[in-house]
Length: 244
Image (tube, rainbow, N blue to C red):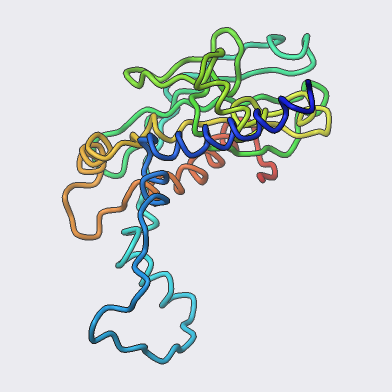
């Protein structure tokens, strides 16, 4: 009976994958489902390729795709909450920060959750931007859910089953025990809290932060800058260390 059911389960999982792609609301799924043309457009001329230096490549990426990749940023640590002994029976500590981040105008909130091994305070830290909110990624009491977002990867249900079976059991919650046991800290952030991963809402926030300029950064450029923001905030609060 088991030999008969296993192929059926594999087929069901494949069907679920394609169903999620077809019904997915994220831009990645929509992009995957678009079919590229097989033929070159009329009048297309293949240009000779000439390797460009890094400055030229960066300029073209900014002008054609991402917008300005490095904006002057202002960061304020508004709140720090230490939850000692919550994780791993005292073998780790959790610190939750609320950052206010702006680019010369209005600021937006970003929660940063840092999990550190108690016996290795100088541990290097894994910086992680996550598809799921912080309270799903670091599932301990007191970790905040983002306001007004409504997205949640916690618990079971069809969505939770699909996430773990399609993308692996650590797609939501990382193997924190192994990370801590090998001498690393883990910092979680949810970039969609800062700029929503939704077309209309994201556009409104980007215009609020940067204005409606031609070179205005897109969400990917702004999200990428959050790694530097988080590393700088952590360094200023707890001292220099390595980040991965």
